[in-house]
Length: 163
Image (cartoon, rainbow, N blue to C red; front, top):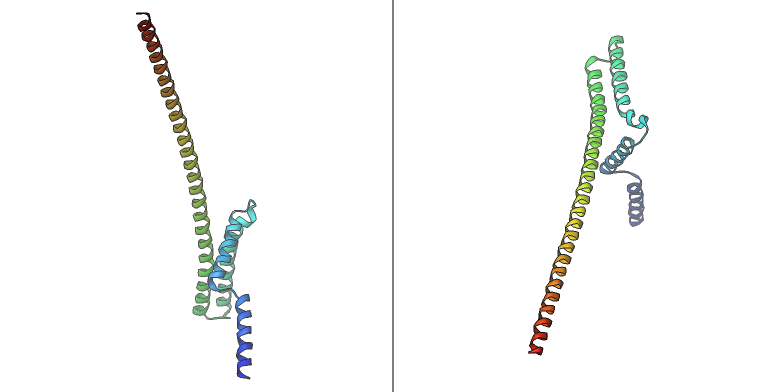
């Protein structure tokens, strides 16, 4: 009976683990979403973070001031809540901006690396061509030397046979 209950609890916890994201998984999901937003060719996904950050900041601040003025909440509680909410909004906005800048820098670095690799490949190929040309010239020189030597031998050999 207890073993059955433990087995059922294990199955429930396994299923719960499959459907619940950990903090790291949630952060990676948010980071991926921010990357998608920032690389979109449309302006709305690119502007949604700053617009929402400004709108949220103004809305929460004005709401807190109204609640304090009407006496609905105490000033300290409202300011603390507003500070926490604003920290979250600003933190998300600046984190996404940082991710965007880092991604842009990485992309620029990758482009530069590709350019350097292409230039290096071109230089290597040019040096191979030059080396092949040098070898060809040396081979041609060697061939000319051999022909001259053979002509000399023939002349010398021909003269020796006449004598």
